[in-house]
Each structure stands twice: as C-alpha cells, then as structure tokens.
Image (cartoon, rainbow, N blue to C red):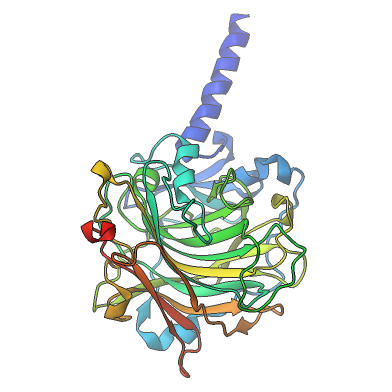
Length: 400
C-alpha cells in the first residue's frame, strides 16, 4: 500500500513540475533536448505530437497539418528599402531544436505562478466601451489602436516594431496585430461598418510584461479568445495553438534588436492568414509558417475576419489612484513621425485568394488621448501598405 501511495505522490509531483516549469503541461519524457540561452531563457524541444495544445479535449485525435497549403504573405522584400532590421531570437545563438520537435520556453523565474491570473490581463481586445475600460486585475487598460472594417478578410499582415521601454511593476506595454469575427452570423457585411460583435479573436505581437514574461524585454506572443475575453484567455501554448515549426519560440526575446528614437528600427513581420481550404488560421513570423488554430477550437465558426486591428496597449495599475509613467510604443506621440514613434508598418489585409488587399485602418480607439494616441499614415506609391503610428509617455497628464 505504501508503495502505491508513493507512486501516486510521485505522479502528482511529476505532473506539477511539468506544469509549473513551463506554465503549461509538459511531461518530462516529452522533452528531447534542452537549450540554455545566453540571456537566461531555457528552451525545451518537445515532441511535436506531444505539445500542450494537443492535450486539449477539443483537439482529441487531431491530425497535425505540418504545413499550410498556401505560403505566408510576402512582406520582407517589400520592406528592404526602408532601413528596417529583422533580428533573430536570442536563444537561436545557443542551438536549435531537431526536426520533429517544437521549442517551448520554460517559465521565467521572474514570472508569476498562477496561469489564470497571468493571462487575463492580456485581454480582452476589441472595441472598448465605458463599461469595459475597467479594472483588469488591478488597473486600467489603455488603448491606442486603429482598425479596418472593409472585409470580409482572410487575415492581415504587417511589420511589428520592437521597442524596449521601462514598465512599472505589474504593468505591461505591448503592440499587436489582431483579426476578429462575430458570433452573430446573421448579418450583412457592409464595408466600413463594424460587425455586431468581435468575440472570435486572434492577436500576435510583442509585449513587455515582467510579472508574466519574466523581465523587461519585449517578447513574442500569440493570444486568442473564443468569447471576446469574457472567460476564454489563451496565451501562447495554453489552449489551441498548434505549433509546427521549430524556428521560433513563443515568449522569447530578440537579440540586440531594440529600436532607438531617431536611430535604427527593428521589426518582426507577422501574418495571421487563412489558407484556401478549411478555416485554419495560420501564424507566420518573418514569413515562416509557425503554426495554426484548428477550426474545432472555436465553438462558433471563425471563417473570415471582419475587424483587423493594430496598435498598442498598456495596463496601468494606478497606485494611489494615479496614472503611472509606463510608456506605450517608444514613449513618443505619433505626431513626432515614423522615425521616433512606434509604428505598425506595411499593414495589408489578406483577400480570399491569399493575396494582398490594400486596406486603410481609418477607424481608431484611443482611451486617453492626452498620454497615448494613434495616427494612420496610410500609404504611398512606393510602399502601398498602411503605416500606423501609436504610443505616448503615460504620466500624470493622462488623468487631466
């Protein structure tokens, strides 16, 4: 009997260690290689068929689609003449994961332990109202973003900037590219008119969030929700994202790739796009198809996007009831121009054939224009993608 009790205890400890070390459940036997990065990140190479998302009951018996049936949108060549740099992730200097595995970051030592409390502050996205610009786990969500509603779309692509700024404790500063669709399907899409809701959402970007991501470096993330963030919150590998490529690790930082005001600008390119077949939404980073969300993960079908959004967000914890100085973007207002302010560059929608669709995100969401703002610079003849600058310094003026 004592042996049986000990075996059960060992099983519980092993399960706990697998979950607590990664933030998602990974069995030690699923790890085929471990890479220790020079920046302190620890990457475990996990058997692709034993990745955490496949343990979700909604994806039981799922057959992995190893490659999309359509290549990601091409962005890099179109940006070559704009003096942008595209850094690699730091962990890649220290090794690579073998074929048949995917890289998963161990939870940084500086991150919190409760995964539910960590992910909720990253959501929800979408159009705010006075009711939902509210406390998100001890703070106010600040938004400066532009969005387009000239769909239906089959996705969006853009270059996302990498800026490192000083974030106050328990706060975040992030950028993102988002696609969304409504649960209400009985509506007639009208170009320029918002859908009745945007409860199905997928977003990709970089975030500085020390209490969740471990330090003050901008790190890659993907987020999704099936109900507008009411109860569904999925960050990186927590729920339904199935990774198929071993080149990028979610949650990790980029090597020496922080933009400087008036100096060199660093970006990653990101695409959220649907291939021509079933409604499988793929994520591509720097034109590498990284993985996808299977249609079965969305209880209400996510067939097309009717709301493409981009910009920045800050969580303000309001100590003493006052606004903190956490910057958004570069900390500069969009009015300072594209060499100083953070910019979502070369935004293009994806049409139903997988090609570029020139689109202008003329609508905007700004919760505190005295401290954060957004500006649509549209496009020119040489660079037809739209540039959207966003950001600001935060501070006491936000409350005036």
